[in-house]
Image (cartoon, rainbow, N blue to C red):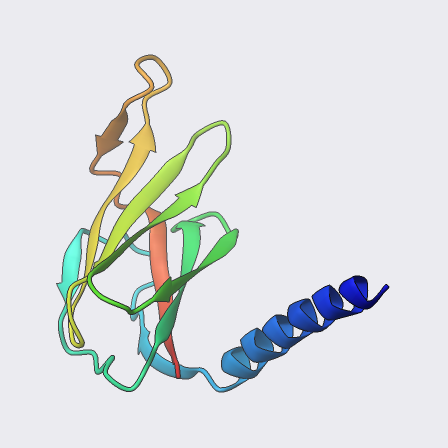
Length: 134
């Protein structure tokens, strides 16, 4: 019984910390054209130094109102992938280079015949907003 209570407290503490972090998020960037294609590019005017994590909100596409949030720890050089699994899988690679620069790759879509990924689908996995968490 004591072990169960201890595990519950660990889970509760972790959830509390995540909620606390989420409530103290600062908006760092917002896509000025969220319904347009988003070509691969560098965002190099951010100030990430005060933050330990960032949250990036993505839209599945410029026309589909389905969203996903990506939580990225900023310890060291970090990469992540926005990924929407479905009948048509789409993704976009994200790399945090340093305290000022995030790189977004081109949108990609899985080729249903070969299973490989095709680039140039820049209407997919559109980054909408980036928040910093302390």
